[in-house]
Length: 290
Image 1 (spheres, one colour):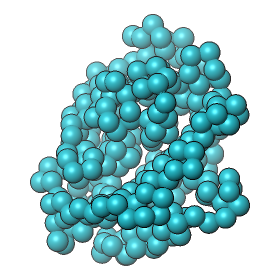
Image 2: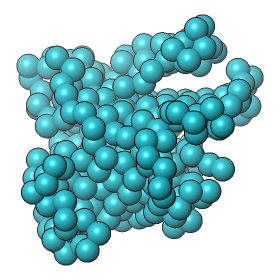
Image 3: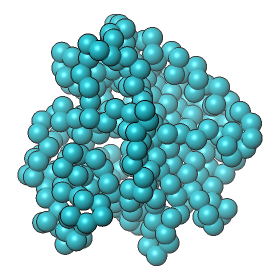
Image 4: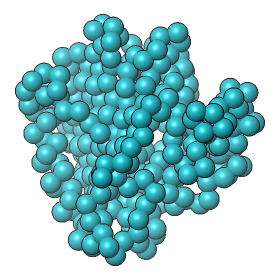
């Protein structure tokens, strides 16, 4: 039974493993090393905040509850954006709760550190960190981008032991990971996000570059979501996203994200997730990190 997908979807603040185990693990230490390294890996990071563009989601904190079928609140996902000078850190944190957690514990963390490139007017990834905990098993993957050398290198550990490392040439079109692509979409870096808009985005996943397709439409055209217009979620648009199924452990790689007119994701549905079917996430808390 796989839960990696619903943690990855929302695409958050990460609670450290110490909260659950009362100690630091190998990956807790490596998280700090990764964050330190990524903030110095590009000359773009030296530009002051006063001279850079303010993005809509700066210092944003979002918290979602996860449900599937008739089971409510089986997990929590949080999204967090922190900014330091021209460096943005987006964190997605997902973990099981309640009875489900006792049966099959999951805690997944996805963090991408990026800068805003003023020439292309897009977010540009510097590094990414991924940790997946399944019961007592832990897997960590770290990716660093070296733009002067035109390469990205990812390293994988399992339960603290090194597994493999690979260096890959940067793609000529795009080197955005899934988190970078989603926030570029929210920032309208790919174009205007409105009813009828279509986007085809190249995203990196492990050794390969895959195509992510996005179709935006009004929720008034959807029988499933039209009832939410003007309601508690205040959703206006729905982004139908099709991506590499392996990225979210689903049969077809389809996600539907509900957006307000300010492009805040207030809900999402991950379709045909392996072992679950459709997983639903509803925004429970919205705040600011200031």
